[in-house]
Length: 343
Image 1 (cartoon, one colour):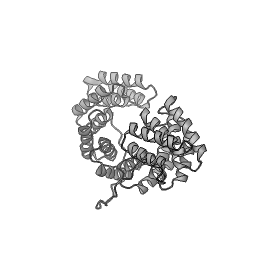
Image 2 (image 1 turned 120 degrees about the horizontal axis):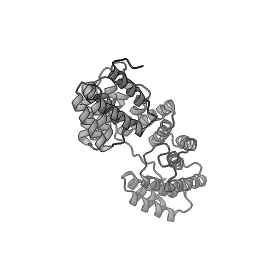
Image 3 (image 1 turned 90 degrees about the horizontal axis):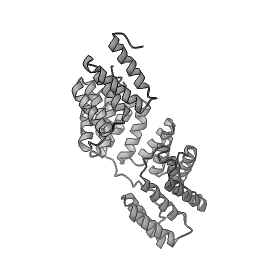
Image 4 (image 1 turned 60 degrees about the vertical axis):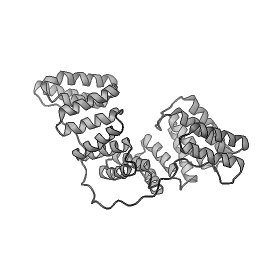
């Protein structure tokens, strides 16, 4: 079962890496700079939220709400914290039916009504609606947020993520590129742009963004995994192995990291090492259909382990009966066993 590797044009000519500015805060500020009691609390709440201190952010936003009960900003802050507490990944319908997020969305709608020109309210509402599975409402709200906050990288990034999650790849690319332009020193923004480029088949461009991501965040396992996966698709196998091993050295608990490394090793012809990585992936996540499929492709190389390959594919099919890779690999395994060519 030969692996299919995405090919692309050769890499661009190397150049000295430009000096990048420090990253900007991710948190869209709710404080206006007025210096009043509510604004002081909002400033402190924004700082706490940026630092990941949700309890501290909540206290400050609640105090701001008491100081200015008719202002939309404290309501946005409290809702922002309540959404963050859920801890759902920012994916479409990633928290569908979640009561805490639904309540936060209701509060954010009230904030929008209090001040239809308050951009941060639209951005936070868009995030909440995306998690709840309201794609149209999320994108409409995020577009309004970008309109009101055209110089805020985070507004463009939030819209770009929502567009990507709902299948609007080309529009997503424009928004994530704008986010990078506004915040060139942010590793995650380069990573997000790299991902949409990679998904659209622009592998060389994706590699360039992932290289910047790694340069800015060398201790980020996901950054090395992203780069390793992209260079693997570009047939830079040895480099892919290096990056993927670095990702695992930083975080050995991610099944996808082991599975991707296994694939790189398999392409290099190191089948035994590849099988070991696939097993490591499956120990972490036994429900990884991709890892079972990758394991099957490796085991099918040897007639003595083809029965195990079939078992692996059947496990993958039980996990995801709709995955077309399972049928394709079962057909190819049948052909190998019968000495014929797969259809």
